Length: 442
Image 1 (cartoon, rainbow, N blue to C red):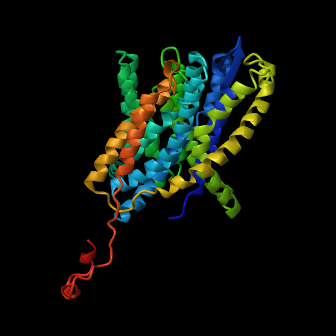
Image 2 (cartoon, rainbow, N blue to C red):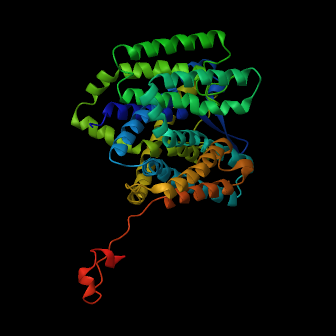
Image 3 (cartoon, helix red, strand yellow):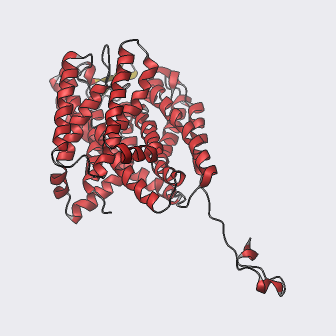
């Protein structure tokens, strides 16, 4: 099946927008010998409306569902099983993540040993781990893809509709009886609904006729109603006073996602024409291979500038939201980009040997599936804990959490089923000539 380069274009554009949005709204400070940081949205009230442009993670999950449906379908048609497919897809994420975690942990440990203050280290460690929230959610959806795709084949678009209703019920439980733990279910229900839309994109159910426009219009109307008469804020990346849209994700975010994804699917014919030339397809393919590295490492240039240029007084510190601050934003983003590009290229080169550790394409068996499931069961909460608490909670490196992650990764690696090597049959007198071929090599 021909690869959908428009899906690749959406992934590249979405990750680029995420990076740009994070850089735009992050404001490091250096005062009285202390490094800190500010969220620009706390000081620029109208900036919350900008989140309607910069919240593009729905597009990432939409493309993820499309890609996972295509990949699992092909794998399953060739006789592959759950363990082999999930292991391969998971490792495509986990190898770059492991490199990032190792590098950051070494950096945090070195900073702690050199006497960096606990408050500064804790805040920096939290900042460079915040974006890891995406990984446990997406890895869980990868593991569930065969089951969710089977449900899609049987019930179609009724699956995300039911998930949306369940997400609304979770919001009611969180806002009414105040059951915050229940809210964690929406990480699967809300982001999972978008992932499910990707299945419907893959088989064409969501792109027939005017369905993308209907989806966009319905999402926009529901979102407008929830913002006007509901408790949800317009901020699509942060938290509100009574209710937030991302921690956990809300039904308002799902309505926003429907509007966004509907418009993106409606634009597919124009997008495919845009990337129709071989040169553009090659460029998109190269960028697509780098998006995970860019996503993981984009907070690092912010830290580099903060600990070098700010204490030296090279970078002016204008008040957040002032005209001077806005005037400096293009220069700020340009400096970060100049740092990120060579950093990403160097990291990609260092990661190349890990690509040779490919997943086993043959059926893995029950043992492989159990080890893989156990490994993911350890990795997912470890990544979630890092995203919430950072690499240095209370100023101390999160060594125990990193150890859990490493243990889970080893289980995933050990889940691989190796093919037995067939050696040459040994010659044992005249009887060996009449033996079954190949048995002599056991």
